[in-house]
Image (cartoon, rainbow, N blue to C red; front, top):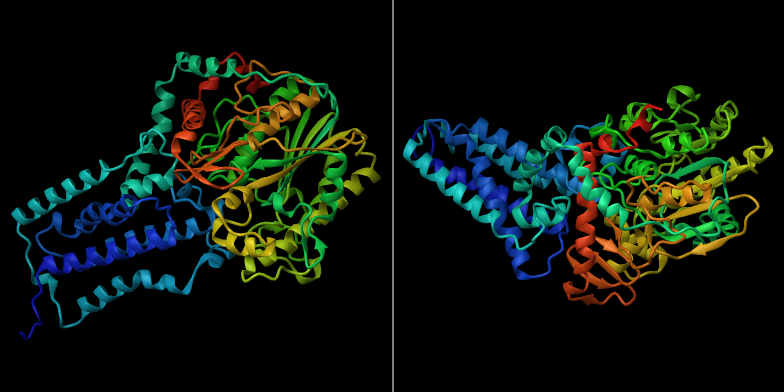
Length: 621
């Protein structure tokens, strides 16, 4: 020991930092991300793949300088740990990983607020212990790294070894669609490691600009050919709602399990339970949204295209040409279209995207009387929202389309005690318990909306489409949900929980429950069928739910799917009925269909290909 303290080699400090970063990355990957492990090789990938990228990232503190500077080492460790922790928080609710696109729309996923704090856990602080330890060591007499030189030759050799490790890791994946289907982010993270995935995501962030610049009309040929192979059949229901006003009700975070479900002997959705008796009720519709959540749901219903896997089309491609539902309605009946939402108009970039989609009016927060008394969580409560929306609807010319987007049933499901119309659930998870109360409140709000429309003579000549926009209870809380429902938690039930209710109510018409598997992308063609509008020459991935083949896969944005026989999720093929795990060969014919449709939809959006179609003039009408 000298007066200046113990001399420590830069290699030792460097390796200690790398080891700490590697250890917590592996722990988070196995426990926090809950990545599906199907073989010893999957486990080996998770253990080994972070090594190369961490050596490269942490090594930036020595590669380009002559000394090891602890301050730069700490900065790098904080940034990398922050990225890992951001992924962890995002995964806890969205079961997904942060992308560059979502960082640019941070305010649209809630920012730092009640939703974020709900996801934080006390043990999360352990992720930063190594950073604090090295910071303490640097201030103590134990180590004085500023005296330690790192020779150029050693830096060059180290850097070369790191690159070899990094490239070797990238070549280990056995997935044939790994990079061509990068929307399967769990497979990406498992195959190349979380940090390599983020590097790839940054590169892929350049795709939209490049694709649009090089796209030509020739690129639409394969898409039009694909669309020509599936045409929906006409049924006796064609034109049943012709010329009627349309009211779309987007039910925030509403999953299908709430329908006809009781908690403590009381119905969660008594009004919806009655409504489906006189409505077309589709009870096997699946949430197909990705990182855009509610905006993804809107996008699918308006365009019948799939959302992007990263970020939201509303934010990333708002100036694209789209053949929207609003354009088609204007062409086939001069419908007036308006959207109603008690939030800021810039949230999810709606103000710009709505104009492009052909909405004539957007009633946003500034059009409502919003007070502390009538608001909770993300904004105005559903009951006053509907009450004030009807007053705006009275001013609209007929026929009209009115889309009403609810807010109260939003994670983390907060509601004033005097608004709670049902007791909380009795599970071990507060989020699930509170969800019961906010869904019940939403149901009461919809009941009052229907009565108000009846009182004002606005009910009879209207077709109502009610749909859950996306899941509310994420995978993190599904064990408690299974507890409430009396289910045994399983991969099959996880997929079943992804179902959202879709109810189409036409006053005076009878009711029918339709059990065909479908998705939100199928809502538009189903509505157009009832309105008597044919759109065969329109590029659309949706299928009429009245004639949809039960065998055709309902496609999820991560590359999974479900049909009447199989479920494919997290790289595993299951028998839908028994839950038995099958050989992946059984699902392979449908996987190609999934890959093709998602790829074509991405080509349309990234390349803005609809500008080359014969319907591009609709955007200007």
